[in-house]
Length: 114
Length: 114
Image (cartoon, rainbow over all chains, first blue to last red; front, side, top):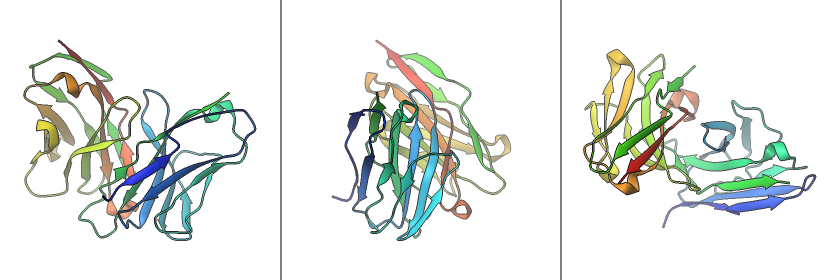
């Protein structure tokens, strides 16, 4: 079944640790996105990619980085986690060939930095 | 730049009553409009979308939305809510010209009373 997967679902980690949040999609979509969502708040785009080897910063500044080496994989990395990075991170994908910019979302990763 | 406003942060409705969630958007051209639902700790699920054509669109779970260009609105409705409709609802606007990136409103939390 075509889908978009995020791992881990929940992560509690100490300050200063390096972390990578995984996102994979099996829908063959060329475009992928990372959104950050604080509890009870709206979603803010932090990274996006239009295809392999293409990555751009989103509307909200983030200390995280992303890579897109394979179409289906779009991991997000924090080199040194801080409590201010505590948030929910949502990955999404969409296809250029679809009638409109419909995005499909993963279940999210809830990150807590202690 | 595109923007979305959801004027109601919280709405409480009795089970079986009707529900209407407001959404106003700002975009220079014909927008692509979406409503997503998010249950606690989950990702976003697409309820419905408007790309063009009939201004009244039907979605999943008995939801519908009406696009009104003159009012720059895309309000979501359901005739009779169920307890399982308690969730956070997000309106979003997107554009192919913006690389399929979505801009979200702040969300409306719906509470359902027995």
